[in-house]
Image 1 (cartoon, rainbow, N blue to C red):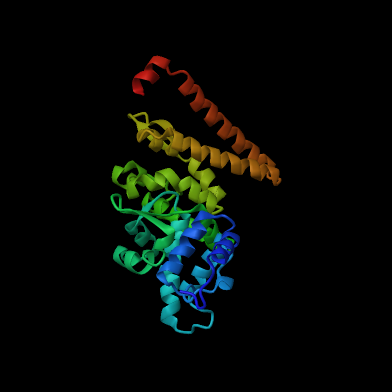
Image 2 (cartoon, rainbow, N blue to C red):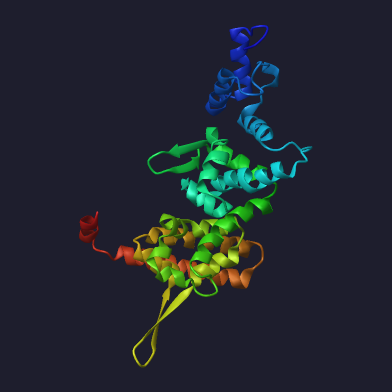
Length: 299
């Protein structure tokens, strides 16, 4: 409620200017005005945030501890729960459960739901049936990428997600032996299988990504110890019928190799590019040799 009352024409004009035509801004601001949220009651049009990013920034400043806050428990709650939860949601490549977030943050799913997700709910979509959460609008994800202190810190959240799966599968140096175990392979409904490569890239861990793509298992057979080598990341994707997911990882690694070549890392980068080109050509050739009748039957 505004005192004195605001003329309807001015109210509309100011919202048009502040929103720059963005529907999500209007949705958030009008909802806050109607519910009398802090900062919107009493209503002062001159103090409304400008643009959607300004709205996000105002909300962040209201929910985060003030710079002069000196109570240790307030900062601990922010650093251990609120901030990590929204950061992991921003980094997630698909809708995730409170249990997934809890495993990464290190507290109970109940606490995640009640103390963190509820406070960020206006920016999130909850699938009641799947019990998953996701960031609603890409602009909020972009805002988070800038707001989480600095680039190195944002990469750290991607790294923690990647390490969850590398650790569960026994580690890269050991050859990811856990991937032989279907239960471990299915961790988080195969989230790691779908998105590990993307998180390694986002964490700026190019070497780990290249190591993942070249990792091989040795299958020893018979008394003569005849070894048969198989590419680990391809094998597990083929096992679950997701070779397109494997090719997506190859594409990421290939792009990083091209960038390394452009930055002057010629010998190694050229070798990697050739490797990924051969992998892609080989799989495309294999697909091209499948009879059309068989493809139609499978479809």
